[in-house]
Image (cartoon, rainbow, N blue to C red; front, side, top):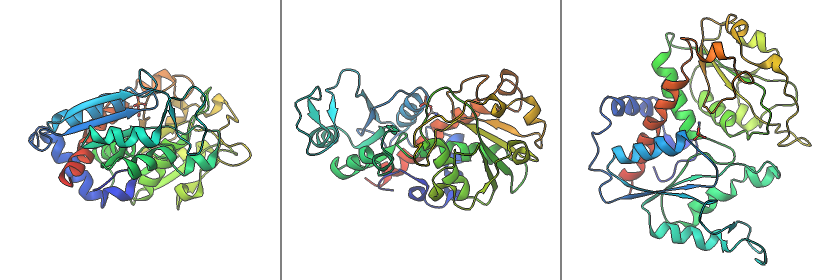
Length: 317
Ligand code: CP
C-alpha cells in the first residue's frame, strides 16, 4: 500500500479485518518493522483519539514518532498557489511539505473541510498536496471528505460484535449545535457499501450526502422506520452537502436524538459513535451508558486500524 485515504487503498476487506484481528492478539509481533523509521503526524485540527491511537500503533511497530500541531508553534501556512503572501501566513505548503518529507518515512495528515467552498473541500486540496509533494507514503488521519481510519475501526468493531452474517446497520443523522464536516458519514457509507451488510441511512430532508458516497445504500427519511430491526445504530451529525446550503446547520431538532425509545425499535442494536459525542444532543445519557453501547471498544479499535495501515505502509517502503 503506497498511501491510505479511502476504502479502495486497503484492498479486500475480509483480509484487512483478518489482519486486524491477528494484530489485536499480539500487537507487538512486528516491533522490528518500524525500527529506525519515523512517523510524522501533522495536525491542522484538534484530536484526542486519532492522536493517541495512531501514535500508540506506530510505537507498537517500533517506530519513532514526531507530532506537529500546525496551528500551535509552526509558521502559519498558505495553501493556495499564486497568492501574494503579504498577510500573516509566513510559509507556503509547497515548501513546508517537502521539508516535512525530509524528516519522515511516513506521514499522517489531519485536515478537515473548511465548509466554505465545496469544490475546494471535495478536491481534498491539503492531503493531495502531501501525497504529491512529500515524497513519502501518506495516510489520512481524517481529511476533508473521509475518515478511513475511523471507518476501518468501525468495521472491525461490527465484525467483532455481530451475531448475524448480514447485520442491518443504520447510520442516523442526529442534532449538533455546530456545523460538522461530512467526512465521517461519507467514509462510513463508503466502507459499509463495500461490505454485504444491509445498510440504511436516515436523516432529515436537506441532509442528503454526496451520491458518490451514498452509493446503493437505502435512504429512509423516517428515522423510526429506518431503525426497525437494526443490529447496529451508528449516530453522527453532519452539515448539509447540497447547494446552496453546503456546510450549513439546517436543523437542531432533538426529535432526532437517539434515545431509549428509538433503540427499543431495533433488534437490541448496539450503539456506535466515533466520538467525541455531544450527550443529550446526539444520544441520551442512558443509551450511551447502556450495556449495548460499544463506543469504547470502537475507539479502542482505532489503535488496531492504524496499526494495520502503518504496518502495510512500512512493508511497502
Ligand atoms: N473519532 C476521532 O477521530 O476522534 P478525534 O477527533 O478525537 O481524533
